[in-house]
Amino acid sequence: MNSSVTINDRGSLLVSGVKSVESVTDSKIAVFTEQGDLVIKGSGLVSEEFDPGSGIFRANGRIDAVSYRTGKRHLPDNVISRLFR
Image (cartoon, rainbow, N blue to C red):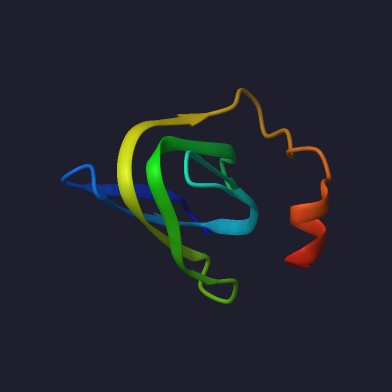
């Protein structure tokens, strides 16, 4: 499965190839994709949809930055990630 990121008007985000959603706050979202850890930073961020079957993740809010962490390192296990298993 390939991974892609689409941002519309810095207000909505669509990511494909998502394996898991690690954390969601109003200023930061972290997901694990086929390409490694992806971090979305901004304000008023809200997770709208995550479909594990298709790997599609959608979010809304003001998007200021999107970055991959180097390598395909998985984010450390935390309380939030355990809730979404």
